[in-house]
Length: 322
Image (cartoon, rainbow, N blue to C red; front, side, top):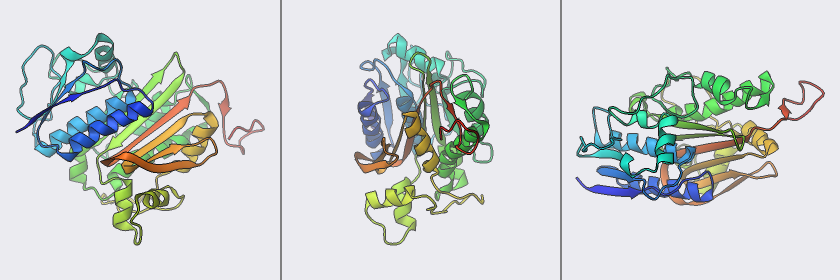
């Protein structure tokens, strides 16, 4: 069994940060059957996109190596208790990184002791979702904690629409040709982040299913090119509907309203799947191009500015923002 040390760099919510997480993911996904030590000695800060990817990769390695305990690592001042899997080397972390990973409930998932978590539902932080029938109250969490009224002034109608579109991002991971048993073990991972000083709200969601591009290639006749596949998936109304979990729910990506809102809000949405990346632009369009990396799965990240405007649909009242 080989052992690989992964040097985790500083990971911010920017182009360099996403390149870093995609590079780490590509390395591990190419050969996940082994042991990986995550060394944080070069990491000054890690934001939501890094947190969600490292957590998801740890579980993916666990799944691929067939571990039964789901206790991977994250020990401080103790010896490894597994010959393969993942260890987060906490003693290589700066205090600001360690405190952040404690406060967002990340380390409590990956340690036997020493890092107490907090009750589900009352926080913005790292989450693991392993069952489509028991959705970990995703919609309630998005509505009541992530998009709470103290952060962003949304009409009830618009808030429900945004929550439903984001919920589709989670459900798509369960609905694209992945068996219930596999998803219950492999899961979907998310990390919400709220910067009170900058007044920015972020959410990243990752899964390690086939990926959007691969899913379109496998299920839509005549589409081979990666860019064409992603553009097809982004088109409103298109859906491969390959869900194997028995739910009568359309499997479109649901990005149209999110894109429009994010652009109006001067926020940002990113999608990385297989070898393609998608970014919102200021003219209500998506910029679709090759990412320079190739990962099995999908990472979606949304950034919203928490400003003083009231957002609602044009039809709701005379103050028309959306």
